[in-house]
Structures are given as C-alpha cells and as structure tokens.
Image (cartoon, rainbow, N blue to C red; front, side, top):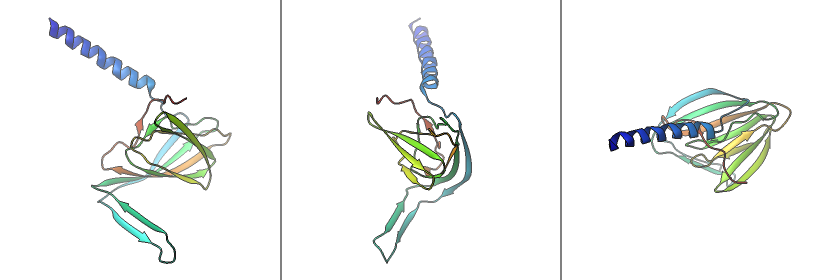
Length: 163
C-alpha cells in the first residue's frame, strides 16, 4: 500500500516539474532562426600570429565539435530570443539594426546595446543571456557557435531574479 502512494506521489511531482519548467521558461518571441551551416570538426589545435604585430590567436578543443552558423532575425519593438544558454561559445555579429544583450552573472544583470557592424562573444556554458530588439526597426544577427558534438544548440532558461 505504501509503495502505491509513493509511486502516485512521484508521478504527481514529475507532472508538476514538467509543468513548472514549461511555465517558467522564456521562449523566443518575434525571433526567427535559420541554420546556414553545420559541420563536425575533429579536435582543433589552431595557432596564428601576425609577425608584424603582437596579435595572436589560439583555439583548442578536446573531442569532436559541431560548428554552426546561425542567422537570427528579431522583430521590431520587442523581438526576443528569450532567456537561454549554449553549451559552448558563440561569436555574434550584428548585421542590421540594434539589439540589446541582457546577461546574468550570479544575481547581477547587465545589458549592452550593439548596432550593425559590431559584435560580441557569448561565453556559453552557465552564462545565461537574452537578446532583444528594443528598436522600431527589425534587427539581424549572425552567430558562429562552437559546441560539443551532438549537444543541444540552445538551452532554454528561466527569467533570472536579479532585479
């Protein structure tokens, strides 16, 4: 008899957990996403430098990576990606319009505006962010994402409590 009650309780808790995750997540709204390219890459060990300056670059991955090129369009007056993270870093280029990148670090929220011709890095991992178009014109970004092979490209997140 106790085991039936235990199973019933576990079932109710599972349903509540799924419902809460659906309600609390902040899905995209007014955003369209097109994957322009995706390809697997064997482990990377890249080094480059410019002998005429102090510029250097190094990229090193362990294991196979999936690299994506993603085109995002945000509707005017509030198109948003919703709060989310990615399992790896993204290089984001603002192609047109103006977007605001809202970021969370611990319980502290920050925001930064970017206009066409600018770019920024989303570190991925546990860095949660949201991109939003607060302007009266549509906006567009292109992102290059480095992810572990087979990983989910986007992980929805709850709206942070950092106000």
